Image (cartoon, rainbow, N blue to C red; front, side, top):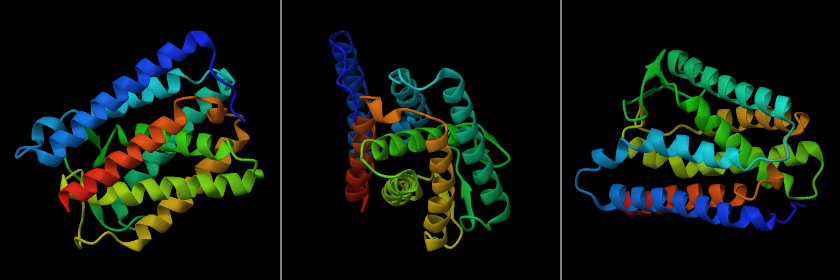
Length: 220
């Protein structure tokens, strides 16, 4: 069970939540209603960096060396799988990235690794809050990651973050997402990462879920 935040951290938590809510709500309104969303799209990498900085900044209970190795591994595995997916079309299906997510290497935006870290950490932290055995917790966290990806996909395709060659999001994508997510979550559980004690974890997951779900409704 997550420990209650110390009195001195409550104000910092509220400020972090307000800043994230401001960024995501501005993006929702701008992308959902603007005739030219390109102005708002250019801030997507910054929003990811801000989310990661605030989220990981509230991690006070994970062992520092293990946390560093976990973060590095999650980013490298996530990025490596995406590179392999783009280059071969075998893992997720045939797709390619646009230019909105910033600089690319081997056809894949560099910041994608950070996105995998955020999703792995948040989903794992949520699952940690439930009294489940290790593997069941990893499965639940992987399902949470896939659920968020289901909401992200139509938005990403609409705004050109990436595109599928057949203009159809294949079921293969979600199966591969679950498999990779499960591997990362098993590693998460063995790394003694204490995301479940991070007070910002539930807020970030719900904020991203509502952002992509609502934006998907606005553009449909």
